Picture 1 (cartoon, rainbow, N blue to C red):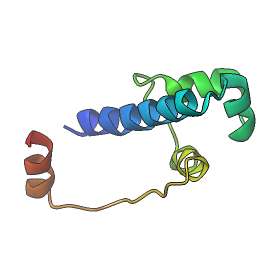
Picture 2: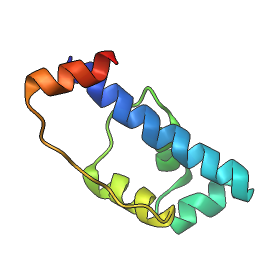
Picture 3: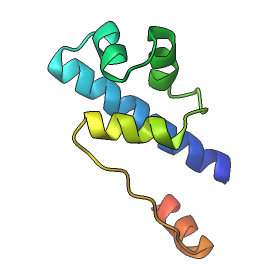
Picture 4: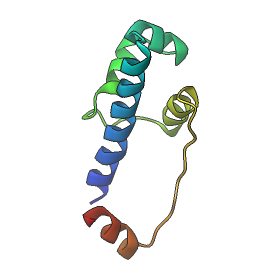
Length: 85
């Protein structure tokens, strides 16, 4: 179950960043520069199946998109219920 949740979070980060880049016509090189990272590192961030992403990177992406990161601790029963609906 944890793997599914991690994959979901990573997929949201990747897809949101890609959508923002597309909407604003920002190239990968320009986005990598804004995130102060390399182009290959940005490719890993944009890859929804590459799960290794740090909280610091997620926060950088959120800030760049004008968003904030919210972390919640839910009871296992609640989180299982939320995933299925």
